[in-house]
Every structure is written in structure tokens, then in C-alpha cells.
Length: 206
Image 1 (cartoon, rainbow, N blue to C red):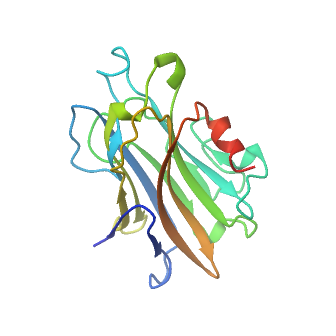
Image 2 (tube, rainbow, N blue to C red):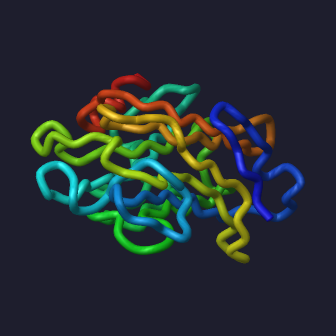
Image 3 (cartoon, rainbow, N blue to C red):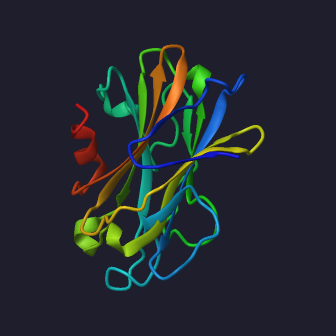
């Protein structure tokens, strides 16, 4: 059974999990007014109709690959427009534009052993596509979560349900996977920002 985390907590990912290499990071959310039985983002993204003037809230998950906690190149971002990292160690499942349905809405597959040594941290963010134009924010979604599970067995290792009030915020930094010596750890972040575009988020790490 996986570990349920609270905001700010950190936990070992590979230590004690001999042989763990390929993992999946699942992120999930629901439109306000809908319920979902599963999903890694358990409570705060409204991803469907009924908000923002009747428009779907299109949440997009992305991964920033950092070197010494800095984003060195735009090529080090994996998102719906670039589904695989240059090194092929990080791969995105593709865009889910509504958040409807059970389970994870977007999934990132990571081969930890193939992540080049210069990258010390992977940051998982979710932002609302065209938030300004659609006048949408994360108060319009619910049941947001991020979870990590073993690609081979499907066993859930870590889950973090995002339960803060993210009303009027347009981007959410959900969690981080980072190196700690020869091991990898996970940090539950859960911080919201007013960044309107992925590029705005990226500049925070430059």
C-alpha cells in the first residue's frame, strides 16, 4: 500500500524499493460537481464543463527537468507539445482536455536510471490552458492529486491529494522527484501561482 503525503512532506522513492527503475507519475482532477473514484491529483482541478462560462477547464501537466535546481534550456520541458525528453527518459501520455472520467488524467512515465546525471530534479506542474482568455482558475476544479506508481506492477507507491484552496490561481506546482545521493526522493509541494502560461512558470526556475 502506498504512502499518503501531506503538503511539504518528503519521502524516499527508490531507497528500500530494490530494482525500482521505471515509474509512472499520474495526475488527476475533476470538474467541480463531478466525482472521481481514482486519480493521483485527488481534489482540486476542475477539468470539465460547467465552469468558465460553460467551457471545459483544460488542465495541462508538464515536467521541468532541472540542473542544480535551474532550468537550463527550454528543451528540458516535457509537455503536451513535446511529449518526450531529449534523452527519452521522461515521456508524457498526451493532453487530456476535460478531466472527465475515472483514474489519472495525464501520466508521465520516467525511467529513473536513464535520467542523465546532470539533472537533479524533476518538477511536476499543472496549468490551465488559456486561463486569462477563458477567465478560469483552479477553484473550478476538485479532487486534484499526484501519485507515483511502479510501471511494472502497477502498485501505488506515493499519493498526495492537493486539498488547499487554489481559487483564483492558474498554475499548480504539484510535486518534485529529486536525487538524494544515489537515490531518488519525492516531495509533496502543492503551491499555487498566478502564472498564466508554462513559459511564466519556466522563468521561475531560470
